[in-house]
Length: 170
Image (cartoon, rainbow, N blue to C red; front, side, top):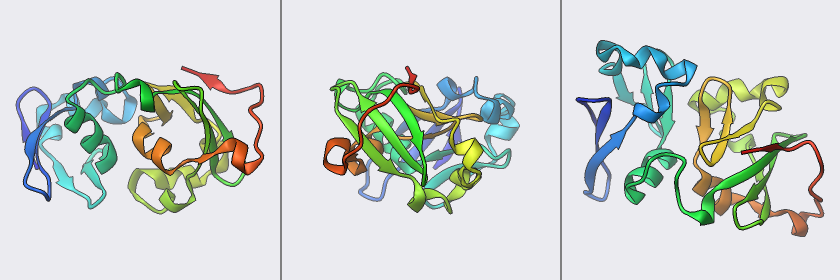
């Protein structure tokens, strides 16, 4: 992975695929704003599951893979994975309603020791989950790929969870 012109990252995946990922749509988020300085943008490294910058901004491998592979703007992904509502539940669970009207429960606990997600251990901060760009986001531009939420979420009906008022809609 190397930084390129116009806030693009040149990516090389383990399976040999290569391409570009446009970071521009993320630059309006507070945590990404320092990257408007090209010198700061160049301070990028592979943090394992994340692409990370010295300023603390980061993008998950799921996000990079989903939007690069689909060759679409972040947030405009297919109908299948688009998040329409989210509600933070106790125990670091998210109740998510997708464009398909499916409601799933996603467990964030396995992610809480990884990179940018560590701040979500603060339950008050975790409760600030909202819909942005068709996925779930927290203040500072912390997000998780909608494909991850969909594929790893459990159907709410099977878990006996009913959708309630008070969800944040996108």
